[in-house]
Length: 243
Length: 253
Image (tube, rainbow over all chains, first blue to last red; front, side, top):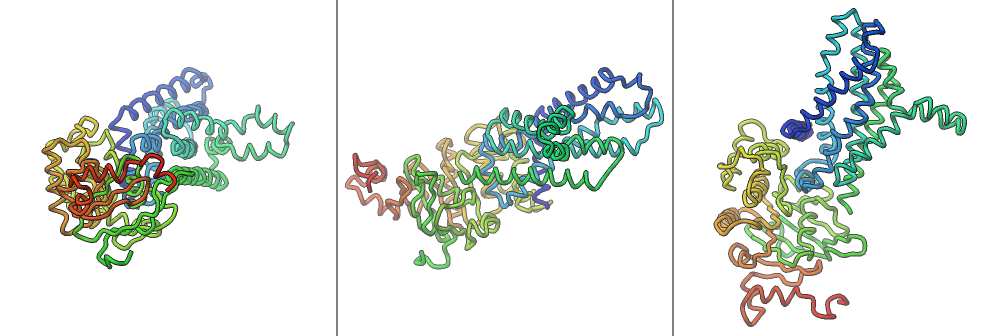
């Protein structure tokens, strides 16, 4: 546990000693601001809630979260520090978890910095802050899911650009699989797959959280999704070492 | 290997590593007892770094086994790595960190807290001569300082077994001299393996030398005994003779 914490602390500090943290948070907050206030009818719909904010959030994450994850292992491999890290007395699981926790904490910090949105709706009206809280929980779980995918992709390559592109592509598959475009097509062509695609969707489960519904089903989904991709991450590391 | 008895801190037993069809390390066996400094020599690509990586638990051997302080590097990897100080090839470290932060990180991962951690870090920095650059990002340091950051990391927990892959590569003559002094000072209570291309270094600090070529041990003895193998009495002449592929010969053998 302490080992995981030590690795996570170093990794998190790494975001802040390089421009990654500033660039990410500035772009993230600017995008969310423009999308929420300017491109959706936030003010005209006359409702004090954060639905427009949460609607765009996963798509902004789709683009930015793989950028947070891409360095996790690709950079270690490029610099050769992976040899240093994995010859310290740490298990592979500790290393994978430590890095993942750091990236997740970083995303949580970025989410916390969106507090002005919450203040704004509270100033303008009387929103249901409980629903906003579950929305944030869902957002954190979506970020965690994309990070787990991105981290696994990062372990596959030395090249951060490849890690990023693969991360976005795989995340997109799991984000878009509940889209009417996809499900309609599937239910006409391969009905058996339509329901599966919807169930595997990161977004479908997230929408329940945004509506204020926290179900065991949703929590289990995210836990197993993240667990699966972190397992892929560990396997990818092992394969590369043995090669 | 039973001859050197129970005091061997580093033991390799028929260690093999194959990459696809290429045999990188071929049945390498030796044991390093406490007090011995082993010079691990061989041309580039002979399998030195691969052997050292297997000792450090970074790569699993294809066959054979290795033990550090009695702990198998595969079966009991964490315990083996606790007893081992390892300097990977090229002395990698995190460029954006300062030596102080970097050593603090490795100390934390090795389980040191609070005052003990600060003491370990300070001691390692003093041994490697890093105090003057302790707060500079590693990426801004010279090659020699980076190497010494890696060395400090390997010495931090005062391990009984040390495996150092080219510890003096890129150091100037004064810094080399300092590292040699450091190795000699540590030698009595540790088992040390260093790989090097500087053959004078072997005579300077090593009590035993092993030469490998194409993954196999081709010579094993004291530096003096190895030198005596060639009429010129020069270690580099012996090295050339043993490791240069004879035209038409070695591949079939």
